[in-house]
Length: 433
Picture 1 (cartoon, helix red, strand yellow):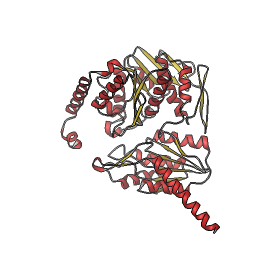
Picture 2: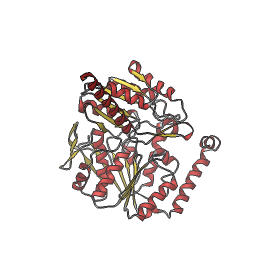
Picture 3: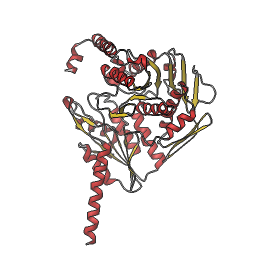
Picture 4: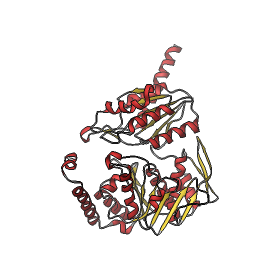
């Protein structure tokens, strides 16, 4: 039905339809964002992690916080999974969520804001206290028509948020997002030393950076941070959250305490198995994110062998990146298993073949995702690292005609690992007798 509507109704009418729905949602729930400070986080990668980190910092400062991301929804102490098909749910959903947050006594709401959500006016009639830009790389190109249009969609959040803007100064698109007027602009960087070349009210720089298989260490304005999360990309995520904290007059010591308490972010470089080899599950499904995950594992763990399981989302989404993902897997991994992910209405085997084309002779194609994980566990040995990407902590696999099946990469890993351990134990017992 949705596809038919999109096919026969002009884009202008569709846009007005979404705009009117946003207005109605705000009216029904009495424009809740007027009574709560809303932080919007946008970008290609890192949005969910920044939402989580920002929420922790605000809570650490004594505020009651609501948050909405692709990982989960949270209002105060109440937490539940995001089972929606969208990272940024529909207009009525968001306005209702904000109203519930107010009713529960929340002073802040931190939202993940997507380009598709912006295109459908889901950000309209929300008074944003602050907008955060993480980074931008090619994604959703087929949906938007071009990278420029994708970037333009992200821009609309910054046109709306005129109080506070937070921008990653190291991203190539930083100047573009700093063009829009705001009362205060905050920047964060790992690379800039003296001459900014950017118009910002304030900026922070991470120095004394150290990465290891135990986490990341860095310093901001003489305050040392020691985080348990892996990868330089998580330093960027932390700086974004720290900047939001500073914009709300939260000192660095409070941010330090909040961030250092984080053990892991669900489905983001999440360690599922520690011994006799390591298994990580990560959400990465863009080339940029996938490469950073592989680099983090290779540089920090120096595994004897890297085994990877990956796929690619279907439904006509960014077909260009499928062979690119396969090529990256072949570049960094010794064993590459391509499997099903979220095929939607496409033939899952055809998607697998397109990803495998980039991986060349290394590619092993296994349609069933559980079977792919089982096979990967069998070929992973002590000192190796297995990384499973594309789903993270998502609770479902989406199939044709809006059907979905319950799924969790982490649970599948633990179940198949337990079966393998049981088989090995039984085999040893038989050999002894």
